[in-house]
Amino acid sequence: MIKHALAVFVFTVLMVLMLFFGSCNNMKPHKDPLADSVRTEFLHAWQAYKTYAWGQDYLKPLSKQGQNWYDSSFVITPVDAYDTMILMGLNRQAQEAKQLIMAKLSFDRNISVKVFEFNIRLLGGLLAAYQLDHDKRFLQLAEDLGKRLLPAFASPTGMPYRYVNLKTGAVSGTVSNPAEIGTYIVEFGMLTHFSGDSVYYKAAKKAISAVYRRRSAIGLVGTTINVDTGTWMDKSSHIGGMIDSYYEYLLKGFVLFKDPDFGEMWKHSVNAINTYLADEYEDNLWYGRADMESGKLRKPWFGALDAFFPAVLSLDGQMDRARALLNSCFTMWQLEGIEPELINYRTMRILSPEYPLRPEIIESTYYLYYFTGNKRYRDMGRAYFKALKRYCRTGSGYAELKSVISKEKVDRMDSYFLAETLKYLYLLFSDRRKINLSKTVFNTEAHPMFMQTYWKVK
Ligand code: DMJ
Image (cartoon, rainbow, N blue to C red; front, side, top):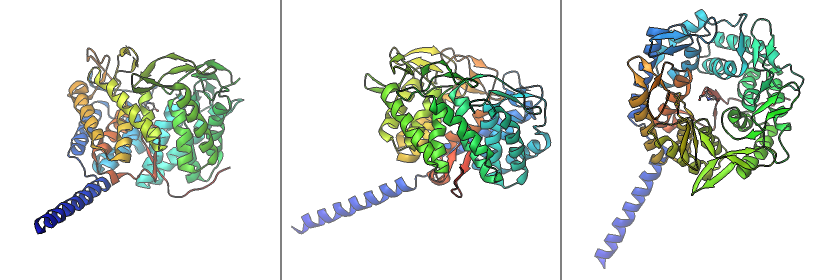
């Protein structure tokens, strides 16, 4: 009898201890040593940029030289990489990058630039740098760029043209897409917050709302639209490239600014996406390509850019879908040991074989790990990291792949590799408390925006 009571007592104590330590573990997931290895790889890539491409927009790791997007440099890699350095505690490197940015970066140039890219990489990067470092010069650069991007929004519909000349304000690029039209509210909203000028918030909100207003009767949007007339040019609807971050910013506009209009637009949009684009095929969840008017699925295509969606779903609390879709993404990654750009998910045939060092699947894995603490996601992260080192690492930085089948490399390391790919990988292996996702919103280039206050802008 006493023996039995003792056994029950010991068992109960053991269970309580297991539960206690189990939940502590869940609350305080430890840093994995791989975080430091990712940091080392970041340093490897940065050192190569420094040696071969210093002051230019990006590194060409095979020919060991730098390249600019236009005639002269906007130091895109240092601006994109700066906040990753701060998050990784690479303060010396951050100082080097900052000195370069302050010495070289000027927007007073007679160059016609891509509005979307300058917003997500440069404006986003400068605003994050300002919030982390508090040096007013970052904000001055951000405001100067913001002012120079504004003429792009002066179309009859309020949807921005694709290009704007930074000096003259001349615009071009009439046929655009939801992503390039609707990916501004995070950066422009923060700029309004810091500058006190509501013009940015209003322009960004008008642009994204103009796309939303032109959704079809069943709530879907297409791939390309004329910003002068508001006429859809390509009515294929999906969550991939050219549409992706339009949806992301509907949700993030709501999360960051608590503007109910964004909440409404997101809710209606995600319902339409889940109704018409979600495709359960052989027990796996995918999102395909449909006609925006009929909702009929036309192409069972899914790719590396679509892989941002589990992150957005999890941010919205749609965990079952997020988990299921990320599992599918991981299957896509495993087809050739590293992720192809586009597949047919019914035949599992690769349609576009390149891997341009994309971050989206890693971003989603980080979000799922953040919200669930499930070690499965760190295991996925280990697979990504191993493949990146095995197939993309060179003696001078990292190279994109022309084909995930042949593993042939391309002579380019895009700036988002340092802004996003390695940042999300680092965060996945770091202590989960490093970033508090209920107080931080990442822009679509992984530049963190910190919510200090809520405010209303009408
Ligand atoms: C990044 O520049 C951004 O994430 C953008 O939203 C689309 N994808 C590229 C990287 O793949």
